Image 1 (tube, rainbow, N blue to C red):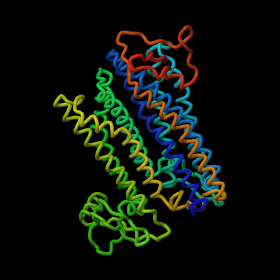
Image 2: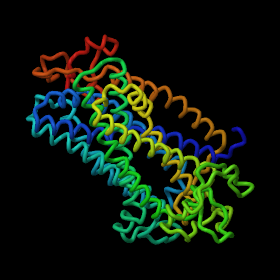
Image 3: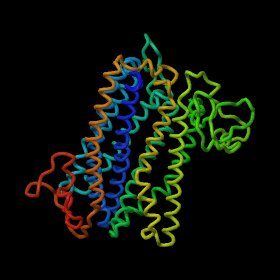
Image 4: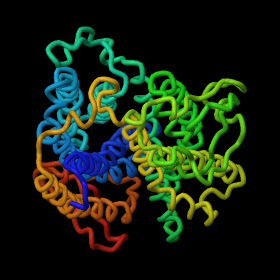
Length: 479
């Protein structure tokens, strides 16, 4: 298929499916915590706007959660079907870690999800809030185990190799491997930011259409506070993560910087833009700032950053891809900080909800968090190549023995099914977003139980019917 080998197609298939999957857990993590905050504020203040927002976003959470579960199942199967050699080599580590994720996080989420979505007015407010908090905690625990497994593949420790297989000897060392704390914080914070800009874009869209009410304003206000406070924190975490990567995966840093040669003996410049050429072993058309690379990565004016030519060709990742994916992530992060600062200035001037240029920027920044997450994952995963377990097992040795025809067929099948299935789901979720929150100050929401319009029995039942109705004719959320 287009001159590609089975290994290339297996990598493309995994990259495609995991890229589709990651957007759903990212929003799930952020929305779950957002819902917990909304319900907590409603219980504390009694302001109906928080309750209205809770019921609005819980419907979107339900759809997103369902798509995340379905897309996640595919990832687990691929380890056995397409990467059986990897599973045989490292399954004694990755298998238990993923099992812990199911036993702790998924069971916790599933156990309380029904109460969260359908328990309104059926259980006491304290118990319902507890269920929402448990679902939010479950998403964080899930992130913990997934990142522990992936981080071990980046910086493996706590094991021995016996008869050609990894055998864990220290589970604390396996879990809390050198890159894990930084990557966990980086991913969790990215999920919160992605959700904040998703929520902010939704509010901006409604305000630009002239739909201005307390719920819409509260959405934008909370999203912008999150951007203002958390985006700079994410930049600081990213700096710490970069220093950790420099220590444990220096060739990845060299590829991210497009830095080839240290023969000059001078401090490393920061290449803002350029085109790393893997064949010519140079970064062409580069625009650089002297010393800044050393300042950022070594916090000094004279130390050098490792160069790609210091490593064998067969051990170098594709610098062209890693260089640009990293810059996309950083550029979006800087824009997030800018949006947060601009929102503070507008808030002070009293124009946060009226500035159309700002609202348009918020609207266009809606997918920025998800794009930044994808760019970050491309950076870290492509930067690990050619290793699937860094320093221990090469990706070429991890793939199953499938033919090009088999991998081509499954890849095309996945592309078609994913775009149809998840395209429909995402479209439906966007229709929910476009309807916006409905305010019901002083009114009780229906229970959805016996004698009501219907009795919900599954997560997607948490969404309301009549999606083709006019905005003003939306029915009450039945949760």
